[in-house]
Length: 290
Image (cartoon, rainbow, N blue to C red; front, side, top):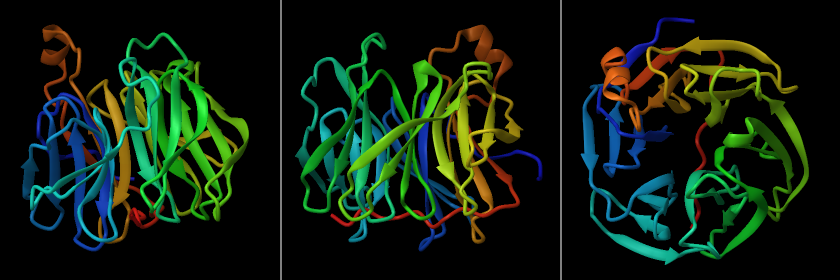
């Protein structure tokens, strides 16, 4: 495993949800609070940024072009290059008390996004599935801070973290219908530094999980045990994705959200996008089929 390098220093308040576009050789990610969408061309190192019409908490690439996003206003379709923005609907019953948060497309092209309690006190969050026809369904509830949505290589397991519980859960995912069953604890991480945030799965079915306030990314084996870790020069490590031409570059987002001036002075790279080469490749990121 090689050293961690800065792939782009976009100084993100809350960098999140990196997504690798294998067709274009680019990495997309969001700064939730600026708000901004970034795209890094891996070959040239050039970064382009757009200001979206809503704060983008998570997104997926669309099969037909552009993105599907989960934002402050709900689900929408958005093409940064053309500027076309098409609201779909807001799936939340409590739009005043909750926010949509981390999300990802599954292997069948459905988009999943969890919600969280704004005050981080109530288990009022849910996990939503957005189907290709634009309709959505709540598949799980009782969540305080939903993060780390990821899928096994065969698409039959969904992972997500309730960050405040410091637990990563797993569900059986029916690939034909998108329904969830058999909720179980994948990893109880209370004894580890920080809390579980964004995640991705490699081709061996191991889960890379970012540790917010933990200054690292952990690699969990299929039994939940930690088998490797990557240390970062920042504390607020938010999410990760495998990309690059061979899918062996682990891209890692970070944040300076709510760091004090003293903390920021000690972490001048907080808010940067990092990259490190790993041994096991990822899986090509699916696209939303809607």
